[in-house]
Image (cartoon, rainbow, N blue to C red; front, top):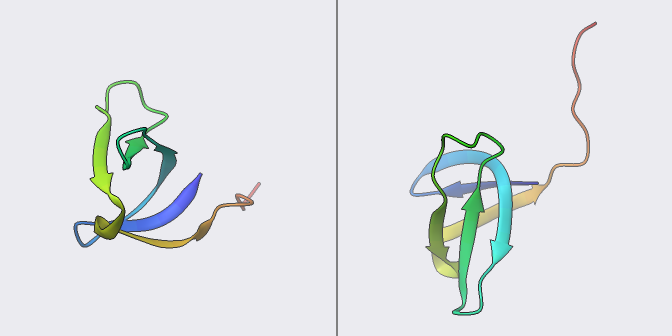
Length: 55
């Protein structure tokens, strides 16, 4: 799971490289369709390593 911007919008989603050189942008929500980007369309911020929530 990665934090990144795509099309000027900040996102936290799964990224998967494709054989054609594009990157699949995947949501855990099955109702959200897969999106694809070329590497220069993505600006990676970093990998999500934890989720902090108030109990």
